[in-house]
Image: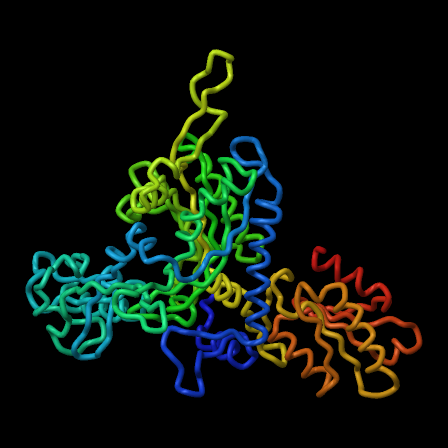
Length: 521
């Protein structure tokens, strides 16, 4: 476990609001639970993370390295609609099975996911009063455990609360003061319903997509038929998804509207194990390359009882997890890498009536023909799915970057990886006279032409230079260039480094090359 102190989530959220990273949605009307908007800095931070994923997955897949078959990894992009034919979600299992069992507390009006609730009781006393319920990895857990220790001592057993069935009369809820206030688990469907057509009725129900993956699966044959790709290859997509979460919480971590970055990688069943290991390891490496390195990032293989409905014996699932302040000392999921087998293609083949037409014909496989060439093989490819949460990635970047420093006027600075920093550089005239603002404007314009596609280049001539530095520290700007009196005589500028506070002089006409080297472009 990391020796670093746990950062304050309240302080991180306060900075996000103060500096324009994240705002509560519809705030002037009291907000709306489970929805968040990104301010000027947050929107650019989110774009930078999305662009980094797109560049490294689609434009230069896996940084140009070869896959386990010895060939370069091949990925093509897709952009599918948020609303699909409802039969898509019937085939995928979302309409019938996308349910979370929830437990309500009649006393506190709180609602809990059943699989997040655990309980302890004295050994052999499970149905005697009281059984102490708690939420895993939360402050309530420590409180309830302390109460259980006081009542039962060391002789206690831990179990899933759902094991009690309907016998909740002797259970003390996680935040309750009275016994018997918890309801038995009830299933809640997480799909957002909508209606198609101006005169729509109940016969015209549709759904906002709960994931971007199915749009890829339904276009598998179209992509094969209209491009020159062949198995193994992947289809990548970013976009909004919607889940009617019963208990949205922890800032942007669990929201009702969120954005995904997903790859569906199609391969021969015999190669699935190797491709799964390849994607699992590279996705972990990718997150590390953006600054999420160290004890706060882990790769966790799922236990057998955690496998999703599309997995089977021998299919692997891993999570890249980050230690957020609200999960510490535990971790929260950033990305899941799953071997989905051929479940989805088979489901859509059956429900669409296309059957074997959705199979892939591989001319390089099969028994030899009389001429010595393979006869070919038709099969449903297996799928490796690296599915990342863009909003969770942004949140992890914010939490990792948040660096308290009482020696600075701002008291904190945001130590973003330069690739993610929403503001790449700031240009400051020391004072608003002697031609300094004009020189600053010239430098800022040159930097915007060269680096503006990567992020903001800010010019600011208001307030003292110290206050401007402090504001850039909170925004996470890695480099500030100051035009001062020496600039007027020798055409050099002062460069201030965000992380070290070191300052150096650089020739004004060398600033673009200097910044390009630091940004790695």
